[in-house]
Amino acid sequence: LAKTTQPISMDSYEGQEVNITCSHNNIATNDYITWYQQFPSQGPRFIIQGYKTKVTNEVASLFIPADRKSSTLSLPRVSLSDTAVYYCLVGDIGSGSARQLTFGSGTQLTVLP
Amino acid sequence: EAGVTQFPSHSVIEKGQTVTLRCDPISGHDNLYWYRRVMGKEIKFLLHFVKESKQDESGMPNNRFLAERTGGTYSTLKVQPAELEDSGVYFCASSPRTGASYEQYFGPGTRLTVT
Image (cartoon, rainbow over all chains, first blue to last red; front, top):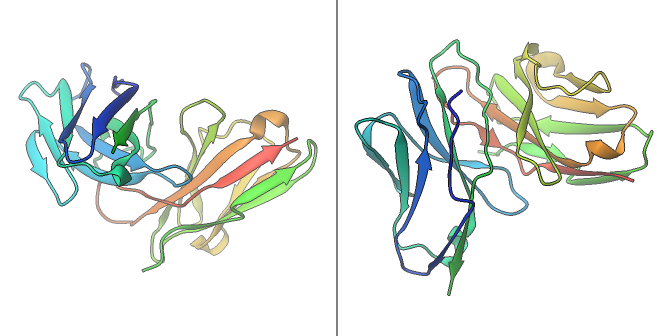
């Protein structure tokens, strides 16, 4: 599994756009990039997943450059309720592959009023 | 649709005692996973069921941990005898049989404290 590196923590203010970057220099050809969000006293929650270029859903956008050695999770106009730990995961999601998730330390995002 | 539920939400036991954690996955999800986070550490995979069969139990720390999923529905994770280092939060997750994804649905976790 490719090792990921993300900032330990980030602060932002309400209404701002937040970008969290994850480095994964050893990403393999079949690997996808997945982001999870975890609120205190809750289990992790899937946010978004992508392979290359850009993916957008109702929660966030995921930007992946051509070399795929990094990715950026973008949260538009954050609110206090977006305060959480954000995890970047990289792995082969193809059927038949191991399904276990490997979590790193994550990024603690704190949104300030 | 109900999400993944776990029981109990908290458990405090003494060293040497036995504790059983329960997980009810989302209905129809064949894949069920157990993870745990011990104090200050990262969330770590314990094992993976496909229906009632153990697909991967490479993360189970030792033979004091026993997971079952009789009938392929809910799962239990028994710790016997519990040790101090077993304290942490135990998460259960489930995912559908079909589809290749890292999208797993997590329960709220069971916080286990061994004193």
